[in-house]
Length: 269
Image (tube, rainbow, N blue to C red; front, side):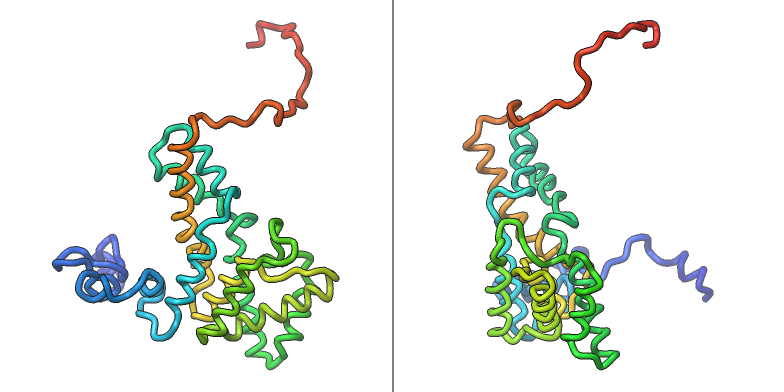
């Protein structure tokens, strides 16, 4: 059979994740959800199974649950503000939550993806070259004006979530080379900038999922999945406590366009 024939015979949609068709319960990664998983694993373990394809063998689900709890809500922030703004227009609740989730980009809540990419690269580089983590981290910091994953505008003295997660990772036996490299980057940054630039939640999550062997392209999932729960809470609160129709107060808006002018050529329109 030729490669072209194989391609023609292949079904259009393929997945190795879930199979709902020939069973009483859906199979996820080969496990029957109702008999093998429900009541036997927690949500952290389910996420690990979905993203890695296997059930965790250690304390991975504990640290995933800890990460999820630490980022489930952060008060009035860009994502929750957008969720509430959209919810005030009277849309279905999932629409306002989706709008808030779309706010996670390179500036807000999405830096963990870029951090995970480069922290995995740095650890790999140190392993292949035999150089110390300190040397690799120092060189990287000195060659970059800004590093994703460090500092936080709402936590000038350091994001406390990162500190707690790193401590738990050590306790759970999850902390490894990527956390170690993150710590070396912190030291190099502090030395260069002469001020505390500690790992924020994006770096903490990025380092921990990297130590668990996750692909860097999954980093944002570990922020967006739990924060969705918080966004639903904000959407619900907005709908039951506020009158609706959010609008930016006009005293917060400054018009800096041209003054009122007259159209002297009405035939041009």
